[in-house]
Image (tube, rainbow, N blue to C red):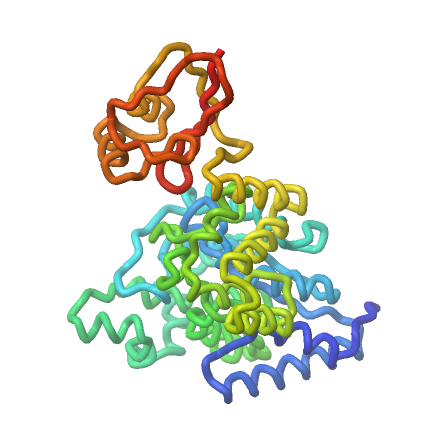
Length: 411
């Protein structure tokens, strides 16, 4: 029989950040969770908790880690956690955040990407306390009669009321029938796992509610659901996504993560601070109050935020190095991991850019120089004919754009 923290303490931890966009749903789910935790506390039986992730790309990004960190909290409190990889739902494509149909993939494609997901997940989850499951194991076993049975629990009107579908319907854009099946499949995951709690983003609310409905239809106690706000991408506007390119991958090099965070618009900083850090809400509020009062610059806050995020996924030492490199780059110096180029004879900046791979073509290099995007030891390169001397001397730094650096050494 397990011993758990008092229910009040567990609720304080688990309800932080929960948001349904609806006060009544929040109150209902809070009450349900409290009741489940009370029974768990009295019987010593852990709750069964899961979150599903469709492997639409090979890498997890910061947006994925929001529900993952909630899973970790459940783990740390002694509950059973399943990291579910949507190897079958991923072949359909979740339409929840889409205003057009997703391209489909095969189960083999999803399995290959899912293997990477499982490995990266343990940057957040405790591998000794995590069960990894793949939903093709039960969804691929359903027959046509089973699917009809699942579909009989829903109306077309319920689906068309969803924001993304209603927009497409009003615009006369195609809504493919297979997209309706996604909610049925994800909902059936809850039945197959006999779950107590499912976590996910606010955009997943319909799908999570579908799980409750299907569990009720199977005469099972409907799962309690916890949803969380969506993390915006590095553009500060759209949801973070690999498909739009506005993502920060948790497996990316520490310096890349640090720099990407620094370049996120100021307007998105609170969103990042509240969703992807380990900071207390009181500390977050204090930091932003200091920014408004002029006692803390937004740049310093961004550095603290970037340090925190890198340390979560790569550790303190990597965060220290990334911070030092960021300072060097701000001063026009190359970061510690920058490529080294050995210069044996006088050569133009344009040739060096191309030979070192900082630009894809000399045409791109010319345009970058003409636009003032190339610097040599912090000074703008103003002509494509500018030469770099091969005479023995100190290392020189060539910068192309904001993030590409080259350390030029002479023998």
